[in-house]
Picture (cartoon, rainbow, N blue to C red):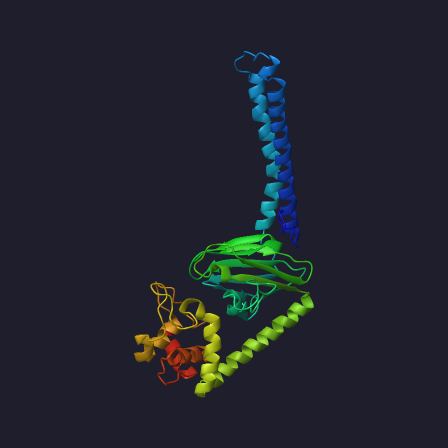
Length: 356
């Protein structure tokens, strides 16, 4: 493990590194001078040599000197530090703007110049976390949907949060900004070379704080533009498919298969693989009276969440198909066995009713 901070891959991160090294060597010189004088004085004027201590009181020249020298040193340190901090905060003239929203425990990215947005979740298999499989190379630092940015362009990040305070931290970019609910923080970067850069949430934000990684892929502008077009096409096709889905009924087998996948990706952290939850923290799905007896309330709590609790609103996080599938799955898995299905049209009706 390296002992020093990373140099990073951006101009700002290089400035931060150089500032760090400048301050470091200044501190080393100060330490060497101060301890050198101290040890020289101890050895040179020790009692064993018969040295008699000087008898004097106050010295205006010395007091001015030891006040002036630290002031000069601090000014010398403040000038490059101020230049770097001003450069770090200058988010003007950005080519791309991405809204970064943190929530327990995932990131949402929205490209403000394009109709592209998606959630980014931990991709490390739960078997690795439970020590049932060998740890991968990028254990806890891999996601299903990385953030994609163009090289050679100034990218501005707007950070906020849906729930508690998170912190978007990518060391290679020298970016570490808090995402506060109800507020917008800004940061920016310009990456000159394509590559994959990793980070994670750096603010203790709850039980799964350690499972909230960040992956950024920097692509050449042409490849980035092709990716944007591909994503816009995919999202448009998904919306069209959802509209068609409203007039269709999925089979129980399809709903259960899709629902299990969605549950493992979005629900298992709180409600556990057995559906038993965490007593006193997250309620159990297995045997839940809400699940077993109140179908409408079950759909509503998945779609709209429950204010004042850790239960999030998944209405805008998941597609109609995924919502219908995971609700059906939880109503029939874990020995609940209600036997009924929830279709996309049922979920859509709840969403429309909430909006009225």
